[in-house]
Image 1 (cartoon, one colour):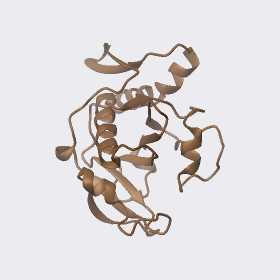
Image 2 (cartoon, rainbow, N blue to C red):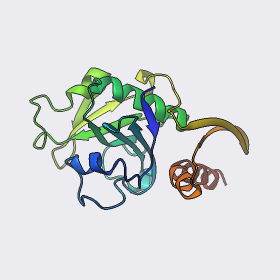
Image 3 (cartoon, helix red, strand yellow):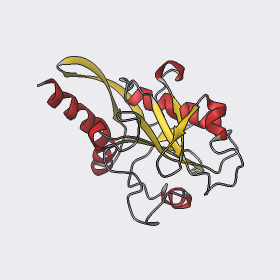
Image 4 (spheres, rainbow, N blue to C red):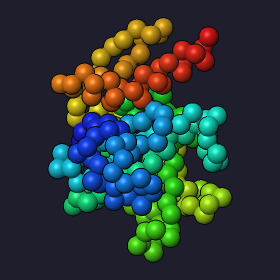
Length: 198
């Protein structure tokens, strides 16, 4: 596993986030969309990944409820497709309940140099599934095609009793504030599930 736990306010990851073409406010302290998220950074700080999990009722695209890879920046020598697969494995370890629509990402063909938009995703097993109203290329990986779960560095698997016994991931953080931030996505997810079950 090449990915390490990060979080939405990670200053170390900020330079990579600033270089991504969808960044609207460079140098703003938060570089992740609102809501649940998994943020991953390589040890050498040369690749960054974000899986967002917006609540379906707030989604405007055709894949409501799906995980969304909202940011991926690779400046390492590691194959992008390999990093993508490991990021999905890490996401699965954090969020064991995969949504039926799996994971989607959106590529702007006007803002990348490649003549094959999303090529690294296709190499990782994604399929082109259409375009958004804004012209972004939509790519999807469905649950049955996902790699197996693998915990990223910085996580420790523990058991907690929320109704049924569920496996949850707890970060190893020296700072309580940092721990609260990185657990935000998991806690929001658990809260929503409890509210839905009432």
